[in-house]
Length: 409
Image (cartoon, rainbow, N blue to C red):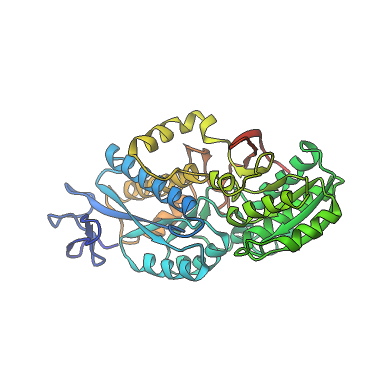
């Protein structure tokens, strides 16, 4: 951003909100950014705002917007007013890449919250890196995104200096699930299914590795198309193995009908999955969800003192969509960006520097605060330092927390 170029104010046709044009970021009287009038800084959002995963995406968007509203009301960064620019990726990598290009092309967008899907993140990372724009996901869990494809061989190398996340990785979540299945559910055999997407495959692999290392046995594996809703063939195969548990690496739109069809077909075992199953919509789409399990990052926000204000503020804001599984981590991702902007402005004498994006990336590596989801900070890879995981079970028509722990391996 340039704080010594001409200001042009444009009125956004869709929102009526005033924003700064891409050509400058001086205040509306021609003074330097950080002067008597505010500089507008935009935080982008990339998430599935339509389609099967839209409830999760809307929760991310709303929680980011809430953080922005709270920051503006409190004048968290003197001289700066935050705005949001949300784009819909529909859970598709191609759309995510296009959105990354649009967001980085807007000079007012200093950083972006998102995306939801790890496969979408893979398509966005290079664009963000090339434009020095921080990308902070509240939901991505695939280790490759931060530590590279050789992390399993303990050859870990940060892939992109601009990429961060406020949710822990599948290395942690999958292993926690494997341990929980063996030690708490007391399962000795498991049938493992994944949806062939980046997230699902990685989560299933981490789960199976931990489960078998403890003495459990994988009695069958299967791959599905995430768009499928008819699983008769898989039901037949799984039934012959009589597993104690079915593990599904994937998202709730396919997991819910799969679980119901397994039970209808005579597979008595409950289904266990990751954070992409932990949604009320999994229960709404599955008449036989009772008894199924899901792991999710962090502790239940309802149990955290740090989340009480977030929950109250979210309710008061009147959003029609719930904050869902990633509301807390999305709020924390947005607040991390806000704190990074604050540090950048403070270090530059109260003004937004011309290289704001790059400075925000630098500042994010040092950000540390108590967030909605717990302590927020990032390690040398850009991963969250918070490795708390919770196991949930469907009790009647709601998810109930069964066990929370900080996973150390």
